[in-house]
Amino acid sequence: MANVFRKVKDAISLFKQVDLNELSRISKKVNIPKVMNAFSKLDDNQVKQLMRMLEGANKPKKELPPINGDFYELRLRLREEDRSIQLKVRDFMEKEVAPIVNNFWLHDEFPYDIIPKFAELNLCGVTYKGYGCPGMSFLMEGIIAMEMARVDSSIATFFGVQSGLVMGSVYTCGSEEQKSYWLPRLQQFKSIGAFGLTEPEVGSAAAGGLTTTAKRNGDTWVLNGQKKWIGNATFADVTVIWARDLDDNQVKGFLVKKDTPGFSVEKIKGKMALRIVQNGLITMKDCEVQESDRLPLANSFKDTAKVLQMTRAGVAWMAVGCARGAYENALDYTRKRKQFGKPIAAFQLIQNHLVEMLSNLTAMQSLVFRLSELQDQGLLKDEHASLAKVFCSLRTRDIVSQSREVMGGNGILLDHNVARFVADAEAIYSYEGTKEINSLIVGRAITGFSAFV
Image (tube, rainbow, N blue to C red):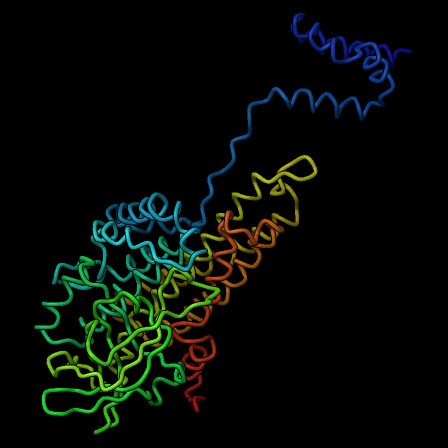
């Protein structure tokens, strides 16, 4: 009897905390004597659980830690002015791109209205000096690529083609006249560029021989052949075309303006990844280009490779951004999604997935951070960039997969963003050198033996 009396006393003390008007309102919906009788039949453990539940209902909502994919706080290694640029890019991507990106991705279209807004950032041609370019570090170039890919990999790719591949070709291999004319226009997005290297039958084997040919005839070069998967090609004002000179069998670079006779572009449709990027199939039939539009310092594939080496580090950073975006979206989802009476982030298996994702992401960030430091110190080698591309694109695949997994069925909906990251990670995995090709570059460096065919 004493035990029952104590339980009833506890129940009465709870009801005393309720306002009389509120109690009267409750009594119209609940049989209070019946509740009191049921309460008296609870064992001690059940009473404690009920008390904790009732007391917890009055507690303020728990403040959760901020969602931050930079777990090792690498941002603290940035200068204040560099950090402000990072946050400026993040703000731009979250306000201007995030609200529209899923719709454009779904419809395989490019949001042309954001191009003038890109120009206002004044960040294109990040690392180049002069010609209106910012002249910043390679580290900042990587961080900008990451911040863009954190929201959308397609937009990051568009920027990477313009700022890296196209401007890099002109900056590295162009004449002073070509630099003075094209670099300011490209930097301000008054002209849009594309980079034509990959061909329908030649991807990884580009170093071994391009099928697109160039034949000199006086002050004119005649180009014939096709290029495939060329980003920005459908609306580019100028395309850098790499072709094999029929006279010396060496690769040379050309600046081909749109509407040049014999130069046509067909949009590639039906892609499952990077759908915002407007990839084109370029066909050249007796396309005539003036000698003044040939890149004079591009005289072999080694010169082409210099441009690719500069940009490959940026692709590794882009993989990090894609992975970070997926992880942060997944973490946010798991803290809001409730099952079995609580957020799924409170369950052990979900936390295990999240920690595995964060571990890979943190390793990737640390690797690319050091990679860009080497690049800024003039110590970057092909194998350094290739190792980063291999590791980061592989781990990105793992992270986006687990991000989708913790979301369950909702993970395949564009509404939650991760489905887009899952698809885009597949493109990042393959472009700018496949895993196999980049692995062979690293393998050659560490063994001393070349395993290329």
